[in-house]
Picture (cartoon, rainbow, N blue to C red):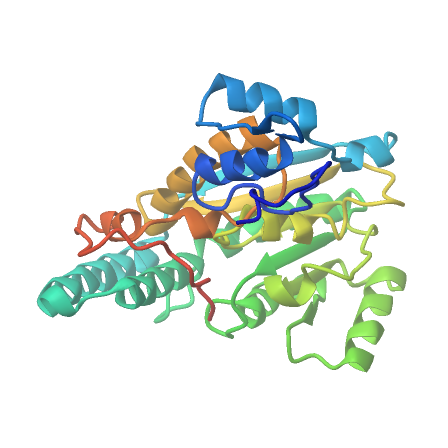
Length: 318
């Protein structure tokens, strides 16, 4: 209906040119690439769509606005689970998959997400012993970077004292960490940020991903750690950019953890395959990759088949 409107010029303003399929970009292009006399163009995924899209897209990247901003270095670290974590993980996964199979036709995306969340939490820390390959590695790295005069931000999507923000605060207590979560009041939040900026004894600020993804200027930190991966890399990028922004004077190092042979590694492979497509077409625009995960892809993480090819609309939260 919109494409059929009588008009002389067409503009589309969007932050998500692609959410699920390239056909969505083609549809936007068919609206934009309109000629009063010749009518609407018709596009299919392919070289012609990509060529015309590059001609019509107008956007401004951070590198265009801040050409002198130091670089951001991304490092993906794949860790082996500690023995205690591995034992808990194997038990939780085998019991979880057995339960999914038992549900039969009643199984749905929510059941799969519950299992994914439980396994991701074990990848952060063992629920029985508190052992954590990620915390062990983080302590060693932060100890070295603190000796060099750096400060660090640590992000987790969870707030729990067993496997989230509070667990990280306890594990990193030798660095006198400060922390922020969604329930932190505005006054406490401002005071915490000031302390991190001005008091050199606080070397680490631990933040829940959704509480600290926007609205913070933390250029004092030059290292960023992602304890666990979020479905949407754009959310991670917003969190990293609390440090990598105007006023930063040194390169920012971002470290992203995932555990070998676990659900984290499998999810990362899916996200990387889709991010490659989006980067090629949209040049790293922030998009919600989670919306492009189908029910089949989610069930396939555990070798199961989905009853229908449902798009994944929920974002997993604690």
